[in-house]
Amino acid sequence: MGKDRAKIVSVFSIDHRIFILSGILLLTACGQAEDSNAVWAEFRGSGQSFAKDAGLPVEWSDSKNILWKKALAGEGQSSPVIANQSVYVSSTGGDQKEHLYLEAFALDDGALQWKAEFAATQKPEKVTDMISRGAPTPVVDSHGVYVFFESGDLFGLDLEGNTVWERRLATEFGEYVGGHGIGTSLVNTPDHIILSIDHDGPSYLLCVKKSDGSTVWKTERSSRVSWTTPVYRNGEIFVSSNGSVDCYDSATGKQIWTVTGIKGNTVASPTLQDDLVVVGSSNPGDCMAIKAGGSGDVTDTNIVWRAAGVTSSFGSPLIHKNLVFFVNRAGVIQAVHLADGTLAWQHRLPSSTWASPLTVGDSVYFFCKDGQTAILSPTVDGPGELVVNELAVGEGDRIYGYAVAPEIFIFRTAREVLCIKD
Image (cartoon, rainbow, N blue to C red; front, side, top):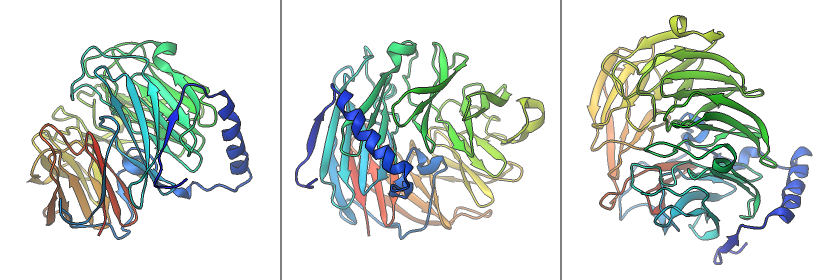
């Protein structure tokens, strides 16, 4: 496809396109397609906010190292994803978020490759930036891109922007109820995508096939309000959501173990290292580390530590070497020892964060909502600040998310996507 000409895709008739994806999947089964094309495939990359040190930029501003900047069709809070030399970004538009968008931009120059537009099933009466607004991050691989919106609409597209399948989950399983909408992102597994829907109505964990969108399993959960995104690892799904941390078998959806009695774990997603599950919470004393394993209710046996006086706001906790970083609502980094959760040091950022921090080699990047990025070289003795870069962000806007490719950062604000490269 020529980069100077975008393809605008109408997506209301899809039956004939199923055969397109079937052909792609046949090639995949024969080993002719590789998932290595997916550079930053989902929320937090692989769900852990880790990137290889591949010449990423360490210095930028509004007048330095911006390779390209593009306006989006709508407005949103999701993170970009990168695969197949393309950047994929979702957004919503209209007074009631009635328009749903997914756009593909060329990684090298930002040219719009295609735009898919959908009609929303569920429309809120009021839209604010504290109610999910294009918040769920898509998933992408070598064969397609999969996108979910808080309206309950879930789509699978091929890499040319054609819709292969669609699900209307609010119609199938009930409309979403709650004051802040649905913010959870899709979770990537080799053949399936996982989606957690926790709200004031009937909640559930859902697994669908990437190939055709059909349900593999659906596990009922108790009603609760949460924006957190699960993490997948080695056949298990870890869900930290208002009131509990749960582990599920990804093949069957059966719950393996649970830790209960937690408060405030409604936004930050869990972070894993070895046999530890680190949980962020807005409630002091409920930022904790849990030992994975066992069966049934392991609340009394598997909590390794609780970090006294520590809280986590929008960003997820980050493990870096022997430390765990939480960022509170005031924008203060609280670094605790991975071994026991005791406080090592604190450091105030230029502003609070919505995006989760990132570890790259010896450095940690903290993406502040007001446009600053603080790059630290932390140790157990202190933050070791290297540099603070700043981008202008409009009033009321934020740095919502990012994606990483070799030598490149992709940032996303409400209405723009921009590329940083030395």
